[in-house]
Length: 147
Image 1 (cartoon, rainbow, N blue to C red):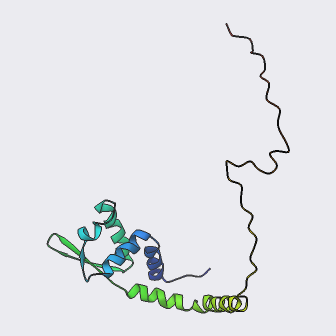
Image 2: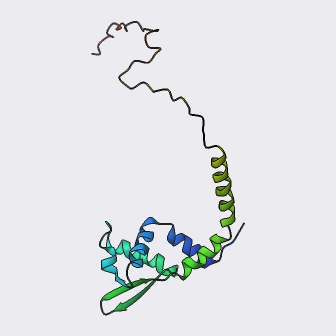
Image 3: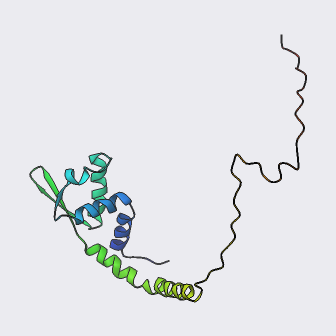
């Protein structure tokens, strides 16, 4: 089993959630953003946003500074740089495969065109429906009534 450094685990865990990635995108656009401004476009409560910010802060991706009653957040990219360094070690695996795929596609530009048979729509009868007809169901006599 491969063990990653705890910081790297926290970074990937923080980046795994789409809401947290959206928060980071909003922080990228400005130097600092207040928590209330950061939360405006999201359809969730402020405490929920605060929990997401806690995860991002624990991962080192967000720095918060309180001035009076306002909490300002800013993006910290260092943990993402560490994650990119780790990922770049494995880049050769997907690069080689993509290069081979590109070469294969170049060699085989003329793919045989498959003949796709149209599927019958729901209101059309299937080709076999005319060959077999079912007799109408006969109703059974009524059972005895309870008293």
